[in-house]
Image (cartoon, rainbow, N blue to C red; front, top):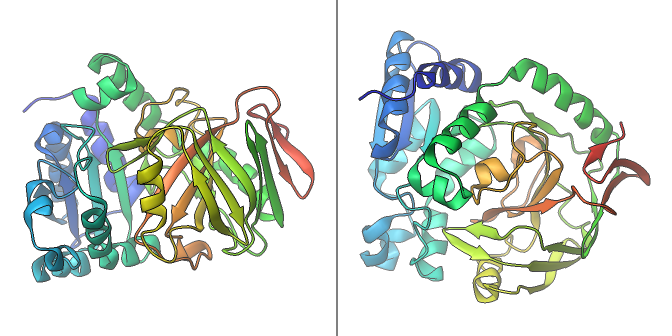
Length: 359
């Protein structure tokens, strides 16, 4: 099946830059049939590097009819075969190419929480960076419609965000990370927002496209009990499991969400926050830095990288950069800072104003 000629470049980027594939590895490649052009290029590139492919194709990412019909006890834990795959593979690639961007929206909260729990063995390996992994975005009609673009426009958007000089991008983001690494307290001020969090002793990770493709963020695991204040996500909806929450507002005390509301989708927001003991704490504070991404698409793989934004992830933290919070949830929610009156402070020094760096 023929696709965009840039798919071959994309596949090489994933194999070399994102994963660093070595001969003899077994690489898990997971996607939907809509991404066949890129998946085929990936399989060919892996073969050229002497690596095995474990290919998993599905129609839906979030379980589909099986997750709706299976007894609850089956949802809690992945099958022995699936667990063996997660333990046996040396690297993981998910090519995100949904047929329907609302996949999982009809999954009841209880089943969603159990399905999230079943992925814990994979999350343990990936979020501790025990193995290389990446989530690569691929344009489909569904994501084009969500983004308010034609498919052709989305293709240009995707390749423009992904096929960049990642060495240069990494150097630029490293300078941003160096300033935040020296900070004990970070304060974010914006519309309906005045939030303080602590990064003391924590080092940032620079996503130069090795973990997610596109890359373009600097991210931290904040101290679990230090977040205080309010954040309001008034600019963009919070999207999770195909569900949208509009105008979410979270108030933190002692690092925990003690009050949550929304203009729409409040029941879903609160139910997700009540998933487990860790789902009301911040697992991640991220800073969007990709200059090729300027517009919101309802696809967090892009939206969390929008230049001039930050994002806060509820739930699971990244252990490799000091995080200890455990949860079945990892929900990235984006806050736009590209308007008058917004700022980020590091220990009282304004380092970004109205979405522009002052470093």
